[in-house]
Length: 55
Image (cartoon, rainbow, N blue to C red; front, side, top):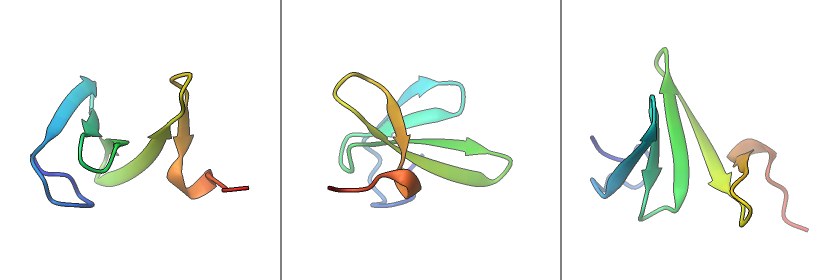
């Protein structure tokens, strides 16, 4: 398996259909052909990349 963003194979599985890319530092999930990307906060919570806003 390769990361859909950077193409590296440096990926770890963190759950059912959930993976972490050590190159992008993002977690992503695959469900029914759809891929969702998440940023992992310092407390471990996942934030959808589309919802993350820099202030």
